[in-house]
Every structure is written in structure tokens, then in C-alpha cells.
Image 1 (cartoon, helix red, strand yellow):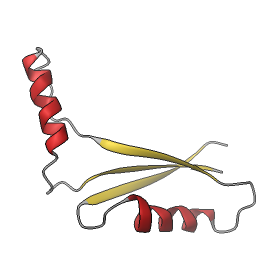
Image 2 (image 1 turned 90 degrees about the horizontal axis):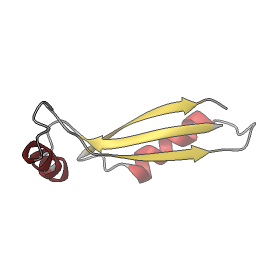
Image 3 (image 1 turned 120 degrees about the vertical axis):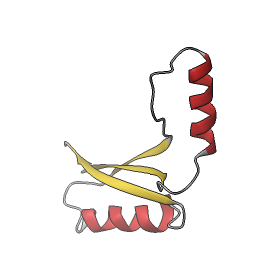
Image 4 (image 1 turned 90 degrees about the vertical axis):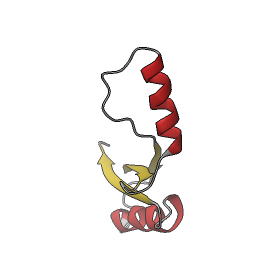
Length: 80
């Protein structure tokens, strides 16, 4: 069983890395972008038959991968 966890800043948090990249893209002529975001992507894989894999992924994302103060995450189960 494979899962993808994408962690990004909450909308109210200033993403300075994304802002710097967006500024560079603007200078290079890519001015049609209205928004640019940076995120971290994690892929987790469990052996088939792992009990409560959905809950395990949520727990890992919540307690280890994302900072609950400034980040949000989404989980997607990938095809096996």
C-alpha cells in the first residue's frame, strides 16, 4: 500500500522560498503566474495487509512530517 503526503505552508503563513522563486520567474519573463507555492512530498509504503495503514499515515503526517503551527498536509492513497 502506497501513500503520498504533501506538506505545505498554511495560507496565512508567508512562504519566503516561494516568494523568492516567484520573483526570479517574473524577472525571467514568466510573469503570467499569479501564484507559486513550495511543498514537500513524501511517499510512504506499507506491506500488503498492514492493519490500519490509513490511520498510520495520518498519524505520521500529523506528528512527524508537518508542523501543525505553520503547515498543512494532504494524504492520497496511490495505486498499488
